[in-house]
Length: 494
Ligand code: NDP
Image 1 (tube, helix red, strand yellow):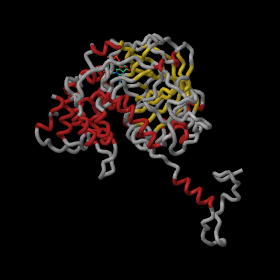
Image 2 (cartoon, helix red, strand yellow):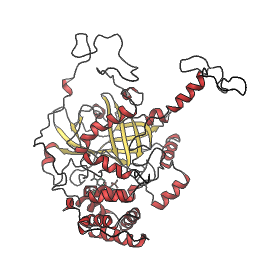
Image 3 (tube, protein in one colour):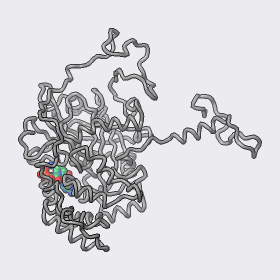
Image 4 (tube, protein in one colour):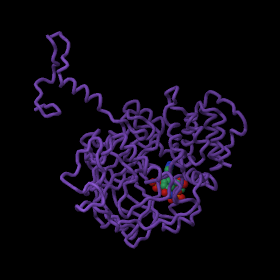
């Protein structure tokens, strides 16, 4: 029986009520008004970043014992399974963007653990373009549309990157083969930030999370991807959805790198710097378990568009780190969901923890699951309301320093790790890197190109020479001349 939202039967869902067969519509035709009004309200604002996404449900199965590092219950036994949701995405494109575009991919996990939700909101890259979150809104501005042309601007991108040498590592990954994966299944995921583990003895370890695709890495060249997009804008969604429907469940090996707390004082790089990896030779990968995706959501809007991940969601045994970008994300993600989905977004089925939720948060739009019949609606109270759990207090973190604006570039080596990555690529991969970069620099003023070439040169002279040669080969129109030499060498990189 078709009903109104108030539950009453609907007599006619095909014809409006009109005054005579040709006559105008009566305002009392509430079913018509309700249908139109609902349609007007069918969208929530799309995510400012990571708008185009795909997700699936699955499980983490623990295969190795890491209980000496963390007391988190989801890891407390080999064979233990925890339900999860994994949402993949592209970053810059809007909700209708094509999947097969060169871009970083989001890799956001929500583990529904017995101690609450743990969200690990990562990417398919181990590093990021910036290390200070003050730069995030500006960086994203350069990836989006120009305010006047309403088109994306290669000049804005390379202007920003060339003025921000800490971006070089991520830029190198983005323009390498792995910057254009053949869908979400054949790519790795990384927690990217440094997080912490703490165990029952109150010891803290720094940790990085890795998810290695068991499908193998598969990537497309720009030309192959262009051909895919011409036929199919949903190539990654289709690949993921269809694989799961036919029972070909994608899997990832979950691994961690573990750093004892005191080591953070000793490494040659800042281990909380989001533009750096921890070399495997120093901190080898330790296997933890296997993530498998085995169920497609039944309703895209309800379960994917409204899925709300936040790195602030951790469980006892897992903690944050001083990583500056992580610190900003702890605020920004939950705030985005409150704005985008609503104050009580965590009460929606896809976001709702499987463990009991007891808070003293009160009212607001759509408060539908308020505790009833309780006198314990504030704290402290004498009526048996929920109380804090001191046993899950994280060990104290030693920090020190005077509060001021520290130059995050001072003393930072932005070139060795991108150079290491460049040197591990084979000759053919390097050639594709050069052409991908040169292709993306078309139309960019020469002084910006020169500034960026200097960064490539500092990472490896062969990197700069390769890009320069590809520019000479690919660019048809001469780029505009540099203004002054001061524009060519960025002060910050000196
Ligand atoms: P290793 O030789 O031990 O590791 C190299 C890593 O590079 C592997 O994880 C490999 O992934 C990955 N890789 C291979 N090709 C590419 C590519 N085109 N784009 C991005 N990653 C790629 O060396 P190190 O640990 O000393 O790291 C050297 C460089 O490798 C780093 O500067 C960094 O750029 C990159 N890297 C390092 C990671 C780390 O956590 N240490 C993680 C990812 C990249 P796979 O094993 O899946 O093939």
